[in-house]
Length: 117
Length: 109
Image (cartoon, rainbow over all chains, first blue to last red; front, side, top):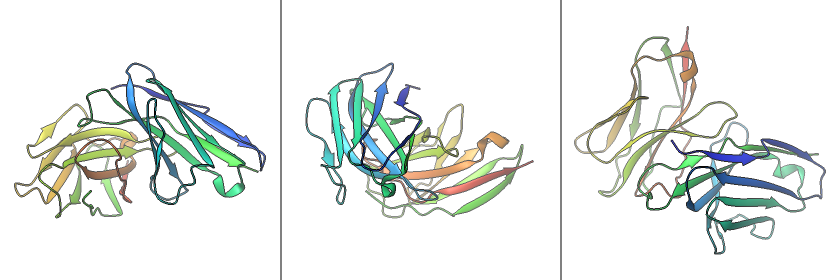
């Protein structure tokens, strides 16, 4: 299957700082990418949908000014957690769908574990 | 998107077939059944998907009932590396997949 890579795999940051997470589709062009968050022992929760060249669409309850998403190219989307606080500590996962493949599988990155201290 | 119901946990002996059920009684005619799994601290991995016909690939088989209200994922020869949380998702597209709680499958030696 296609490869989606996230960077970094884990990050520790101080409270109040911002952290950027990258999601790259390595061998296909992704018109749409999705960002999820997963707390311990819970399922994945969709945060936002990122379309190349346009503003992201956020799910209800997700603060768009806190979780900045940029999808500047067909192979890269970034999630920036601004002014991070300990409650933002979580496992962040992205997924991507290739052009013309909306009815097939979505490919997921390996996830980024964020710890805010 | 339609909701799914899965048992919270299952055990299976190594080498045996693991059969994971999923109920999706409110599935719409244009919705697919997707299966993903998540091994601890990793991103979800696609397994298989289908609309109404049974499907098989190198990882698993998907059996969908004729009325499409339920399905079963079959791992024919489970190994210890198949221990994971398995998610059954129904959706018209692979976009915006909504994950439930899944089934935590434990393969025992």
